Structures are given as C-alpha cells and as structure tokens.
Image (tube, rainbow, N blue to C red; front, side, top):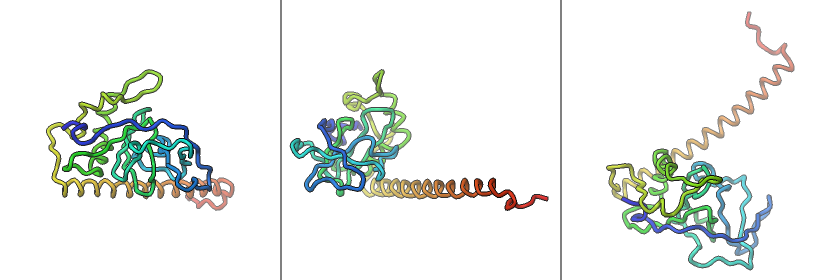
Length: 207
C-alpha cells in the first residue's frame, strides 16, 4: 500500500519567521512556525529549543494551517523522522523542509502511520531515496510510490493499530526516562571521580 493511498502529501510553508526569545511567549494569536531544529531523532519536540512564529503581517493561507492529526515528515538533511502535531502547538504551520501528511484513509490512524514512519526499517528504506549533493533531501515524487508497511504486510484493523501506536508511545517515554537517568548518573559519577582525585585519602584502600 502506497503512502499516497493513506495520506495526502504537501510541502510545508516558506515564510519569514520571528524567533521567540528565551523566557518569553509569542504575541497573542501568533501562528507557530515548526522547524526541523525543534525536534529530535524520534520526532519529539525539544523544549530547550526556542520556537518561532510568523510575523503578524504575513498570515498563512488557511490551507497551510495544521491540525492535531497532521503528520510532518522531515524532507531535508540526514535526519529522518515523523512528527504528529499536538493540539497545544496550534495554530501552527510547518516550515518548508517538512512534508505535511494528512491521513485520508478511514482505516488508518495518524498515530499508527507516525509509528510506521519512525520505525528503523522504514527510515532505512526512506534513506535509500535521499538525493542531492550539497544537502541531501527527499523529493515529493520519491514518496509517491513509497510503501510504509513492510513487504507482504497488510494494514491491521484499527484496534490493533491503536495498540501498536500506544506501545510505541510507551517505548518513547521509557527511552526518555532512561536517557534522563543516564545523564544524571553520569553527572553524579564524574563529579564523584573528580572529588576523589582531589582528595585521594578518601579513596578506599584496596589492600
């Protein structure tokens, strides 16, 4: 099943955007401008990255506004990931280095398609379609005959899709907690090692 049978594909919006300074909020009614740099390899939005919004004098076309079921697929650079837009980000548009996917098939959940596009096997197959010399990218025509499901696999029923999508989100939360724990553990251990080097008398004797 081709990606185009599951979703309509369009390109993000090119528009001048104003960065949001740290510790501030965009003006009321501002339209968020979602960019590649705001997301990690799993398509998770990085809270540490400052966002951007469109200038008041450059309102986007209504057709380019995203919804809470919109999917974004990175189109440029070596990082490949998909993002499911969240209600809290709206109103928003995607930068032009994203493809915007609007799921049209009634038997496909956006959260399931998100999981499919972020699977390592899918990324390998997408990466084989990357082109360009100075900056690698995916062209829209490269997606027209792309099949997100593994070869020989049919689209599962909606309850199974929901189960797999929920399991994927559970894994992401577990991964984030693990990475946070490892970072805190590293900070503690490196600090402890430094203290012991400065005060070797506190190092336990091995005799």
